[in-house]
Image (cartoon, rainbow, N blue to C red; front, side, top):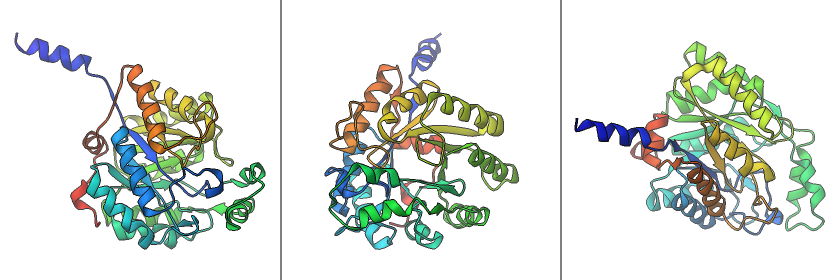
Length: 321
């Protein structure tokens, strides 16, 4: 009889939702927001503040600290990686995406060096257009900003089947990383399922539905529901999903994702604004906003250790920084 109250309490326990925060990325440029973290100190502070606000996973890119140009130089990662690990127990997730103008070896260099618990992983080649952003600004802090945006009109982000296999082998098999599989469209899910059937990807599979990037699926509820249905058909109970939406749809689509049983991603990499259109003043502001919504839905933000358990991560002690 004594076990009955304990079972009842377990039944009432809220479902845990993993909040990922992508703090800077390579899409937005310094002109677009004074709140975008650029220097290692700014990236470290933004990451720790996001973790304190409720983010279990911190998704990281680097910048040249002088110009703000997107960088995949391991030397630009090292200062903030060590600082975040010292100041927080958050899961550190290093991008393998970099930007569409980087080679595969350049993009993978930070993760090969740092051997993090997680890496993001685009599941295919695609058009990745950020050039429309250039039309919103007349005066730029740096000449490289409009030039980099314009290049995306005629640049393909390349992750061929051979590239995918390199990442699986180099970072997964050899270095023990688990992946945030970024799926921008149906074909990416089919590719993910192909490697799952081959046994090269193992459960639990963490799928990130990426919506709202020009070249991928638009940020609509209909697209999210469809992608989720396809993932369930292809991957069954072997997968968990999260959702991010670029731009002002960030929080509304994340809310729908949480309602549908998923996890969520926010951060200034994906959107510089809050729902009303004003600039977000920090990554932590977006984390607090989605955490409030999650809790109002009767759910709870997962801790970093809960995220590690759910995603079968190797742990903080097994990284190389």
